[in-house]
Amino acid sequence: MPIPVQVVPSVVPSEKSPARVAREFKRLLAGGAKLRPVGEAKKRPSRLLAGGYLPKFEFRLFDTTFYLTSLRQNPDLRFFVVYVVQGDAPPDRTTIHPRIFYKDVSLVWRSPSHLAGPVDDYWVGKGDVGVSIEDGYEVTSSMEETTDLPLEMQAALDGLSRRVRRPRYDEKAVRLVLRRAEGDRVRPYSDFLTPRVRAASDPRNLINRGRSVARITRANDPSSLRFVTGFEPDFTQGVLERTSSRSVMYGGALQRFRILSKNRLAQYMFYAGPHHAWIIPPQALTTEISSFGLRTIDVVADEDLCVPGYEYHFLDESQDPPTFVSQIPKGFAGPPSTQDPSRADASPWLDRLPVIQEFRRKLLGRRVSSAKRTRSAKSKRAPE
Figure 1 (cartoon, rainbow, N blue to C red):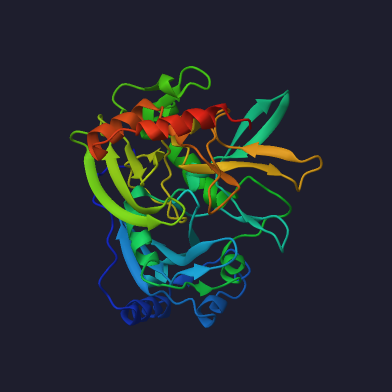
Figure 2: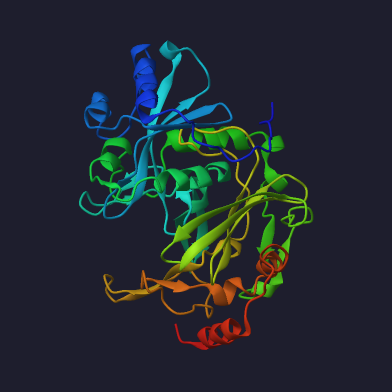
């Protein structure tokens, strides 16, 4: 049976007090619910509760309930510890999955698949992987968009994160919750992959038969972006929501738009700041949510459609010899971010995408200024 599809408003945190949320969570455990962490707390799950990780907030999407702690911060991540409860089974038949929800520098909230790298310099897994051939070698790369939390949850997570001025500093939670991989393992484990494989095994669940809904048809030419008919964002009748947030990196106030495709088979989220506009990877409208809080069905699109306003563009001097790293299409990197010099302005690419131009014209009521076009043109010619 195919996974149902449903268009719903973005979730809103319950109005329950933090004390009430914590009491109800304790009652769930007292009723026999099993707490199943996969990190360092695996052998003794009570370490999470004894360590101060009782939830304070709650919201629900489809048949999944999310219990969230207060916001935490370590040198690498700003995050919540989240307890994911799927379905409505009696407590003694319920499994609670502790997860980490963190905000990526691209401003997308994500649920990492695992933990890898050195103990003192770990990195979080970015989900499912793809394999490509580069210079005759097989290269395995993370598909980061597979860890993007549902678009329906993004505004709620932003809102909860703004309720505290100073997040609690915490270097323990990530290790307690996330599964530790040996070495630099990129591929996630079966608990992440199995629900995705099962969902994709039914062709009726696949969006555009698993093929890309948008692609750049001429190499390194943003104006050549083309959508498969029906999968274009519907800027006229498909705007579901318009919310706001703030970002120091992007210069202040941000607007966020959740928009349906014209055929109502996919959804998009656009961001607009004082000087930037970009789109995050599109998502399905399917209602199945995994124990990681993620959709099990993808919407495939050209990765160059979804370059964030600032993206990695720097010389990695930790390599021998130093290696240049860039995730901005070649020749389109603008000035470095004043907040993070390892990232450069991707507007020279973004502002030439027809879908961004249409978004600005129809929903922002403005085009890119002539001054910005001049700066972008100069940036395009700058050496990389």
